[in-house]
Amino acid sequence: MIKNDLNLRFSIWDYEDITDADISQSLNLVPYKMYSKGKRINQKIPRPSKKNGWVYGAPYGNKDDFEEQMNKILDVLEPKISILKEYSKKYYCEFSCALFLNNREENVPWIHFDKRYNAFIKDVDAEFDVDIYYPPLNEE
Image (cartoon, rainbow, N blue to C red; front, side, top):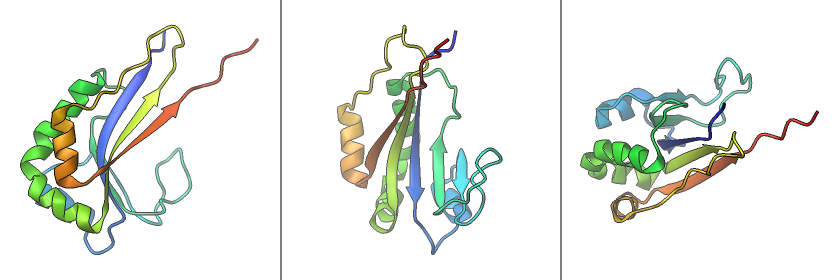
């Protein structure tokens, strides 16, 4: 049975004056994914990316709940707040949460922002974006 899935990422978007490698090196992190303006998004999506993007987080299909994913990301990013503050002054920084509601019989995954998250967002000045994907019922 397909389960509901929640995936959390931290992204830096809309940079033109630095490279993906510059961001990776300054943060000493390997991104999950990078988008290059004008280049194809991936093999399944033929359209080109409209902007540059650097994305940190776990691949889709990971089994951690929201709190576990958030804590893992914050464990890595909190020591880099001073660098992230500078990025957020120049570029668009956000947490993105993709919620896939694949199973109508299963409880919907919860999203809760604790004090740790709120302190990080206040310091870095990033945004939060939630996308909910709800496939249609199979009608026979």
